[in-house]
Image 1: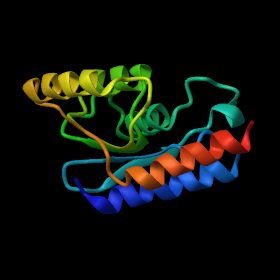
Image 2 (image 1 turned 90 degrees about the vertical axis):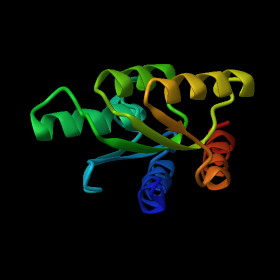
Image 3 (image 1 turned 180 degrees about the horizontal axis):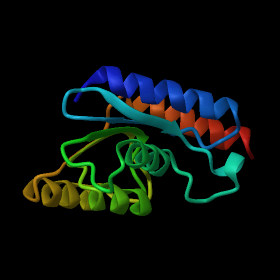
Amino acid sequence: MNEHFMKIALNLAKKSFKNNEIPVGCVLVDESNKIISSSSNSMIKNHDPTSHAEIVAIRKACKKLKTTKLLNFSIYTTLEPCKMCESVIINVGIKKIYFGAYSDAIKIHERKLRNYFYHYKNYEFLGGFYEKECSELIINALEKNR
């Protein structure tokens, strides 16, 4: 896990907070640690419920590289990927998923089982990086939009 990329994702999330989006930032990195794409949530701006930061970053990378597979890539995101994003991440072949805040939608026990499963399948699915900062940003957005 490279803290530098998580900090970039956190800064992207802060920008999306200022734009009244759900504050999630994402950075997609190749095996040489080069940033291939980055994004933040843009669901409200685009009127598109699929414009999650992870999905947008993956779309940009695939278009840039003219491919549908992102093998040997890592993704850094400020919030635990939802099921939609997780499915796309796995389907494009990304093996290393690092995230900040945990989603409350998944119980701790289920997370442990899932993390075991992904390690078993050669995935790194690890969370809690800059968890406090990422969580506070989400909480502040929810409070702001009440």
